[in-house]
Length: 339
Image (cartoon, rainbow, N blue to C red; front, side, top):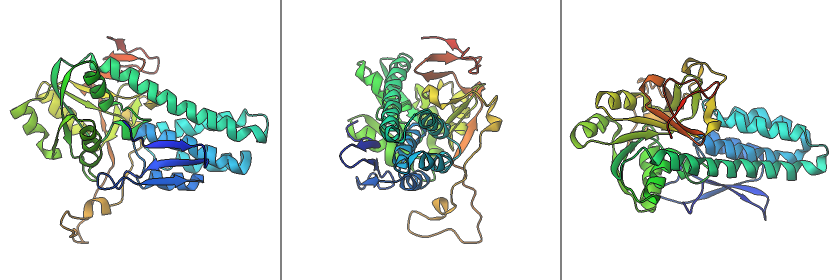
């Protein structure tokens, strides 16, 4: 995609983030010159998507290097904890911190960290393209795919995971119709996935989240493909709230359900999904009504950002290391390789 979520401006030495809160109405940019700006952008969903926030945090560590090693060490915990569910965030920060601690001199610190952050960005782009190519082999020459939230170029270094599979399918000559759940509460499917798919000329249709069962029954879809924010060793995984329900519906209607993510999203330190911390977002994201009204203040709101889908619902995980079918044991990367 020509517009990317995370870019480094070498002339100004700043991190440039596409402000995804403004899409699709406006294309605006945030230019960060310090790590706290990156933290705020992650917390406020200006930049979001597990790989993208990991990449942004890596460059946040570069910005912190202006304060020397102590500045980097001080910024690391704040960046790593900006959002709790996606494993890519602490993974990227820890990798950058290890690189900083192994750098012999203060003068070399910033250029070394910049090189490492760029490496993380390029590795993500390469991983997305690789998993996209592997995943598209699971789709027929003419097919329809349902996805949820945004697991595309905007959520990654620039190609996408779940939507990267869709892109790769078209690049390989396949005809793909895309259905997207609007993805409550902040409509990342309707605002973001639909925008980037439409920008590239895909046949794309947005449905309300509550329409997925009717879609599967009445129109039919050939596959459900979603992204992931953290995948446990047994294959349980966290993704945007509503994913669990889609997995159950897919099982009921005989639709294969796939999860696509780079290896950096796999957290083999967690035996099961029970250990995944689920972020809860501000109730204002739900309390505000489309017509400008509000829910009454005496009405409570529960607003988890993610849910955990049990591994038994996943037909296969798609990552750059291969396509893996159950039984899953990612602690030793012992999934059954099919492609």
